[in-house]
Length: 324
Image (cartoon, rainbow, N blue to C red):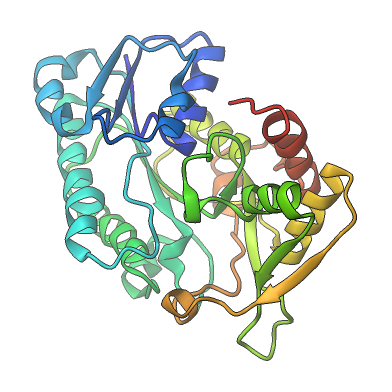
């Protein structure tokens, strides 16, 4: 059996679909399956082949009984709201829960592949190299990034580890199955909705003189590439460590939005608004993954170019309302 936490979420549900395509149908889906789970999120699992749904609050007890039958854990579940200000939420869901899961994987000799984040890099004072040596010196800009870095740091202190472990620092992921994410969804999805509704899109102004409006740059990585990296790690159990998962190229939000207009065959109509006060001082203006470590580990697939990924996402998923 393969466990996927966050199985009804963005990356997790796409991963379940790809695992199914590979003939892996013995999936244990872990998430919040209570009545509070939004309908858009539940739709991510429609048609997926899973053998059991386990509420996230029951997973540790479930592993006590079934741990010997698990061949791999993909831990994609977390609170990913970068605007959340309650540190207890992150302490419980992102740090404490992940520590418990690590210990269960150690006990049951289960490989663990978990989601970290490029938010751990903060303003990038230490660069964007996925070296274990700099984890202790990173200064994330928000509580979400801090919780992810705290877990990475804790992992590196552990003498007992699962037979394989990999922490994946996801950069700005976009693609199908993010329909439920609201404000936290990618600019591609927001652009698509706004263009269809109004024929226009608004981006944040730059509040730093060295960047033009819309010129803030991120490493945008297509969700299909992210999932390919997860599968590579599952199939290469000799590979462990913390790895960047990005495209390796910084592109602007303006580039991303223009690509969305192009994919829809619409004329560009882009204006700019002030960055909201609640995120302005926590806003990353530049990220770019150094991908050499993953390449050195044997990963050879090319990453999807921005315009190609946006075109595939818009034309084959957003316009048709399909799921991965």
